[in-house]
Every structure is written in structure tokens, then in C-alpha cells.
Length: 147
Image 1 (cartoon, rainbow, N blue to C red):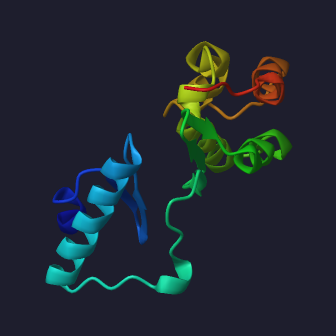
Image 2 (image 1 turned 45 degrees about the vertical axis):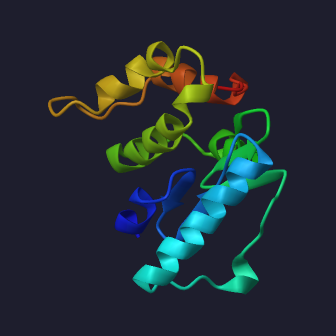
């Protein structure tokens, strides 16, 4: 898939999901046609029941893409806000991964999460304190912005 998409400007691919885009309708159509031609030559087949063409807005891998910009998917934000406080290092690592993915939309993320990141150091003992809880709770108050 990566080798195919490298030959296709105006495409993004994550696992088996592919997104075709362009600044104009003409550029989009050119990129889509190129993807179809390269895919056919390489034997890649698309499932037509899963294809949506010329959508004004799409949800793609946790982000909403539209003609204006890229935005965080509200469902992804809700998942982060509803997450309970971690009780183990592994749960904290998972949480940090979730919010790191949304970092382009969260102002001052690094300073907000500093106490949490310190808990992930090799030599840090797990002890969830009020400082950690306050840092964790800031995720509920942050409203992600456009990039």
C-alpha cells in the first residue's frame, strides 16, 4: 500500500483506509484518476461499497477533514474526556498516546502533561497524587482548536 501511495500525490493512507484530496475539484479528480490507474497496474482492488467519492467532509483516522481545515473528531475528544484517571503505568501510557495524537489541537499540552510524563520515567515510583489528578483533569477543560 505504501509503495502504491508513494506514486499518488494527493493521497493519504492508514492501514487499509485511503483518502484522496485536492485543493480544487480538478486536482482531486486528477489525483483520484492517478490512484485508480496506479492501483490497477499494481493489482490493488477497492471495495466499491466502502468508497465515498467527493465528500465535502470526511472522518479519517480520528480527524475530520473538510474544505477549511483539519479538526479533531468530536467522538475522539469525548473518548478522551470520559477516560477515568489511570491506575497503572500502562493505563497512563495509553492515555498519553491518545492525547499526543491530538496534540496539534491542544495548546500548551507539554506543560499541562509534565507531571504525568514524569510518572513514566524508568526510575519513577507509581504514586498518583493531587498534582497528577489536576494535570489529568485539564484534559476535560481543554477544548481542542483547529490546527
